[in-house]
Amino acid sequence: MTTEPFQYLHDELYCEGVPLAKIAREVGTPVYVYSRGELERAYRAFDAALDGMPHQVCYAVKANASLGILNVLVKLGAGADIVSGGELVRWMKAGGDPAKVLFSGVGKTQSELELALDAGIGTFNVESAEELEVLDRVARAKGKRGADRAAGQPRCRSGDPSVHLDRAQAEQVRGRDVGGARAARAGGQARRARGGRGRLPHRLAADQDHAVQRCESRA
Image (cartoon, rainbow, N blue to C red):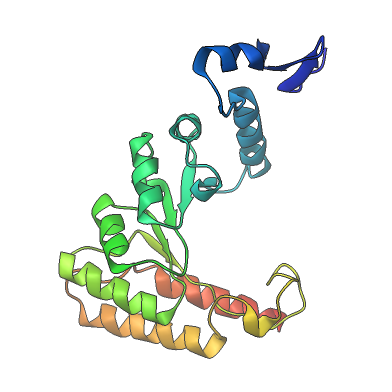
């Protein structure tokens, strides 16, 4: 017998041994049916591929924000990659740990940054110097750190597909040029030197500097 989660038996479609027609009769249609076993298998395979190195597997909530699916992943120990405040709310409603959240996306609003700061998310994926300044200002106003970690995305000039996507030219890739990244890093150092509450994560400068060095080594 096949081990596939969805399979036909006697011309009837089943999911994990349950006839889909039976589910449709009981709950009505339209209905979306997912295989919990397949979700768990796929997550564990992905997680196992990174065994031996520090990592956190983050599920892209925008792919499917069903509370049932999110809860399965929460119980497996997954983190979340979000692009909106609404996705953060869904993740936490499903029992997800905000400290395992990575907030990405170029359209974060100030209210969403405030929501994320109040929730105590783990990482902001900072997409621009302007966003960094807003995050800094909002964090200071709340007397909080921006996050335990903030990740930058310097723009790299290289044909190496591991540095940027093949489908875009270097100047079109989301991120910052090396000079801009160094300037943002210097600005962050100046803010930390001034001290005070609400300053941005201390690891941001180190993260950006490492990324800049990586870009330069591949240029």
